Length: 85
Image 1 (cartoon, rainbow, N blue to C red):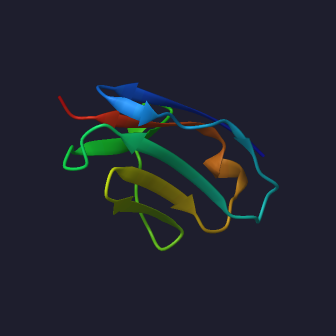
Image 2 (cartoon, helix red, strand yellow):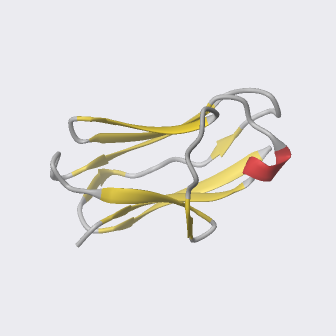
């Protein structure tokens, strides 16, 4: 499974990295924002990500992480983190 990723919006110190993940494995996308209190949202192919037990988000300080616990074919896409302006 191939998931391309890009960070969008303002002030990203460390952008997301492209990943290739085998089906049924876990995937983690991580970026670092300039302002730890900045709000933002995760997008998949330009649409807001629907979180579930299998897809979750974590914020630790300035680090933003999207975790797909068990990848499936429908998870293939371009994931982005967009910082709110």
